[in-house]
Length: 338
Image (spheres, one colour):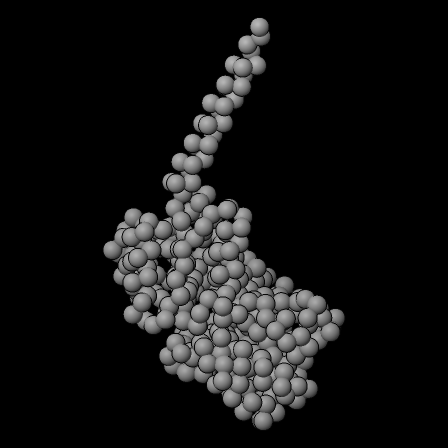
């Protein structure tokens, strides 16, 4: 009576059980990432939503779950980071520069936990910081706005009046004047508190005020407030440029483009680096060269961006990457000096 198949089957069963045990142990030893969104909500169709898309991509590609928390007020920031660290989450990712102080405090309390923050720098040995060259992407947005404008007047609506949004504004102005030295740029900020990121009614009011002064293309770097800007542009037959995520599909025909800030890529890479054992503290900066910023081109704005516009944009992008065009960074000295 042959017995080898039975032995082989037994060996196979033992091997399979060992593999399962190993996989289970690895899964249990691999920490769960956590994402703490900034003010404005997870589905702001902008900055926070880009972060959400990044962590969802991580989930889809790895099969792993994650923790998340939406901030309702400033007092919750420290609580959220502390709770995630206590649960053993890694990395704990803070979305937005307004989270810096809270993250720095909690990172000191949990020196063995790996943290990360998107859009600012926290100098701690257990924190990874990711920055973007917003001014480079905004330069291209300004160029596109000026090329599409018929009035020679383009607008900018910022969210919270802080240096990083001034950097968007400054890059946009430089790009507009590069494309058309005679162009006029009108600018407004929504407010000076985090509420400025989630006030579409005020965004619409500011956009309409600019339209009344002759602006026919407006760029909103204002989180959820931008939704009001884009709606106002549609209502009045003007053009708008979105920010952070690809917002072209919100109002096809009046969304000229979106200045992409690849927060999704940053969040995905941070989470994957811990899983793959390549996570490192320090600062990473993503610009045009690293494909961290750029303009969204798809079927929704194909008729609005002509081949000539594309050629000029591609040439300028190549020159920025090569260093032939130097885009001034407002945050270098808190001034726009081009």
